[in-house]
Structure formats: structure tokens, C-alpha cells
Length: 93
Image (cartoon, helix red, strand yellow):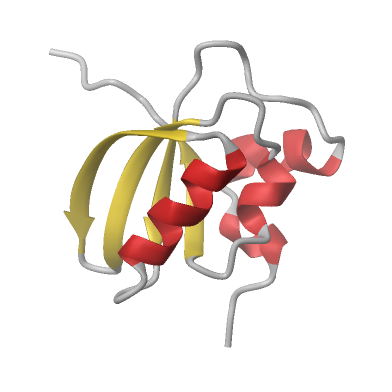
């Protein structure tokens, strides 16, 4: 059973998604995908105009860092392949 779109967002993004605010220009997002649907998720993101910047693994499934371009948070949350959405935060030393 897919997650409801609201449960996919970290709290910092939920308000933006509800009010349909775009993410700040130049922001990137981390998406955690459901196991076994990486290829479908990447294809859907590319069709929507987002670009994959990097990929990494999590215990919950494959994850992508994306440049969302003009793709809305709501559109990302409606993707059945996506189980989590959070802001990308670069590591600091």
C-alpha cells in the first residue's frame, strides 16, 4: 500500500507542499524510493523535468539526490515509487 503523500514529507517541507510553494532556487531534494522501483522512479523524474544529481543506498530502499527544477513537491509526493522526501543538506566538516 503506498504512503499517503503528506506522510512522505519531512516537517520542513510539509508546509511548502500544502501551500504549493516552490522549493528555493538551487535547492536539491533527497528522495527515498521503495525497493525494486529505482528504474521506474528515475524514468518518471526525468519525464517530469527533474534531474538526478547522485544516488545512494538506505536501509529503506534506494535514494536519489535530485534537482527538482520546476517539479512541484505535490507532484513528487504523488509518485508511487517515492516513500520519503527531504531537503538535501550538504555535510559539514
